Every structure is written in C-alpha cells, then in structure tokens.
Length: 122
Image 1 (cartoon, rainbow, N blue to C red):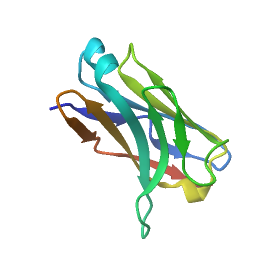
Image 2 (image 1 turned 30 degrees about the horizontal axis):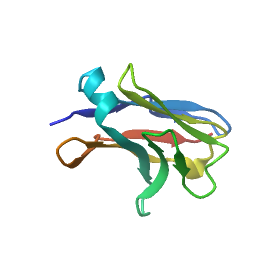
Image 3 (image 1 turned 135 degrees about the horizontal axis):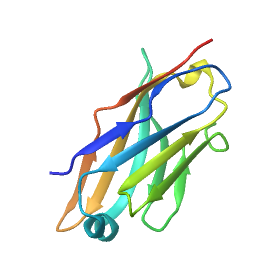
C-alpha cells in the first residue's frame, strides 16, 4: 500500500498564502509510470467535502468552483509530490485539506492522506 502524507497546513491571516504538499511513499519510477491523477479535497465544519483541485498525468488540471486563479496545483515527479499553492486566502477556506492519489498499475488504486488543517482567521 502507498502512504500519502500532507504537509504545509497551518494558520494564516486573510489574504495570506500557504503551500500544501502531498508526498507519496513509492519509488520515483513507479510514481512516474503509474500516476493517473492526484487531487486536493477539503471539508469545512458543517459542510460536505468538496473538490479543490485535480492534476492528471498529462498535466491537465481541474479546479473547484471559485478556486481557479487563487489556487494552483502542480506536480513534481522527482519528489513524488503534488503541491497546492493557495493565495488570497479567506476565512471560508478554513477546512481540513485531504490529498488523494490515484495510480494505475494492474488496477486503479486510490490513496488518501490523513489531512492537514488550514485555518484562515484574523
């Protein structure tokens, strides 16, 4: 099984920025060859989980509503890491952010990280 771990969460003031990282515990070659997509999801208190961003193996990206332009997802295959750069943060961005990694080898498999808290407050 693949271990996925998020980092970079914390507290920031409105208008600030954070960069989240999602690292996968697999070899670089496996990561490169099997990568299908990886995404960030978030869940705020009292709300449903929502999509933040997804990046696919071909580099295409998808963003949740109202997030494109503030959030940017990227991937570093050498580091086995997917990043989420978050700018112009607002209190509404406060949530637990989860990383999801999906790989295709013999079958498609998905892995979730434990989540990292992002708190935006003055």
